[in-house]
Image 1 (spheres, rainbow, N blue to C red):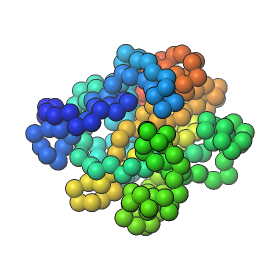
Image 2: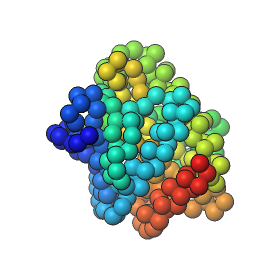
Image 3: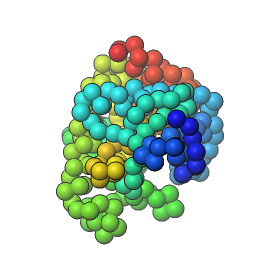
Length: 238
């Protein structure tokens, strides 16, 4: 399977068409961005690590009955997946308060939330990815009906439960993460995008060390080493 036409280029990936109209290829980039693109850099090998980590997690979620666009990893930086129409909602799942939740609401950083919080952001960089409620989603016609929002929330919480247990066995705490969903050719809502430390906050369960893109956001250094450690723990526990 070969890349043909560049369909889309985002902060972390390029999406290419293939000779099969139902299949796309994602090319994982080494670029790093934060704060809506205000902070930029690059880390050689980061894209390959995200591809490998995402591959393992998509395969694991498939075993647990979670439908996604994933087909297979082609090589270090390329993933083959189903074509899907992106639902322009970023689904934020939070188990522990940190980042924007603490800044915006004054909740103590590191506080364990009394229940899993699921938030919706509008996937629009020019608007700064503003928060959405259900009525916003319907007015913007991001979904067809409220039942689809309920389904997305249900899937987000189910994925969270699965991955919390998965990471706990690897001495990692799943703090929060971002998911994206899309529609396949049969109009089914499926999990898409990537499942990597670019989109997941992961803390070492013993030391509290950050093992995710916060190392770049906060200028801590050692991002690639942290990503390599996450992949190592995932593979060691297979």
